[in-house]
Length: 92
Image (cartoon, rainbow, N blue to C red; front, side):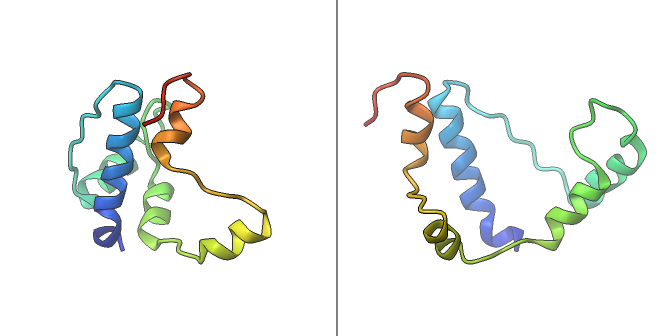
């Protein structure tokens, strides 16, 4: 599942970084290393992820978004536009 979505996630992260003028620094850490680190350092309040969160991310969670959007009468907008409006920036 992650391999299918990886490019999309990186695109979103890069777009947010571009809008807030802070390009993200990405480091690939294999899951087995991150899981081990989370098990050992889970008790630290500043550690960014727990073992349970890693398990949930690996399980995946995919649903049809159109049904939910229609039921809630939500209309998605472009990501860059959504982030630019609160910051008072011009939209392209």
